[in-house]
Length: 220
Image (cartoon, rainbow, N blue to C red; front, side):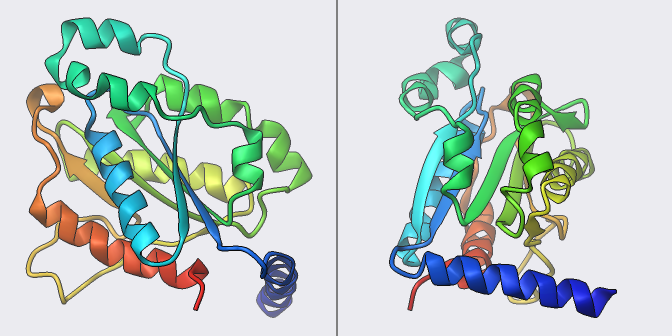
């Protein structure tokens, strides 16, 4: 069964890449950001992927309450305009992507309501299998612990698996001097009030992850 499945996936991938061989491979980074941390991570990933010859684009899910947070929380207000200027994600965004990266805050060990609302709209795509064999990765920002964030990554990965997508994990990296990341993806610890911004250590981890991700879709 495994051999048959692998052959089936290879055929689909070969056909897809042959059809898309005349354009740069596209990576859509889709975020929900309230405090600005996921925006910072998503934007940096976009830059890293672009440096690796990938057509990387940054989108946001709809958050009708973001302006309220911006009026009451300084961390939100700092990046409110940057986040608001991002284009909203839609089904066409997903269909045109070779790789999809989801990122959002952790709420009680799970994805935010706004990210869940967006993912719920994609149910028809799981039935028509239009996202099958697209590559997938994810990240999150949380207040309390890497373990809490890992639960959010698992929820995002479950969505991707439901779509038939191929998850690319962060993995284990001896070349990093120190890393406490889960193997499944990237977790940023933002602390109380989400006030700790992503720093150099996370930047190094994102650079390693970008190398891994780009290797799957980058052009020669």
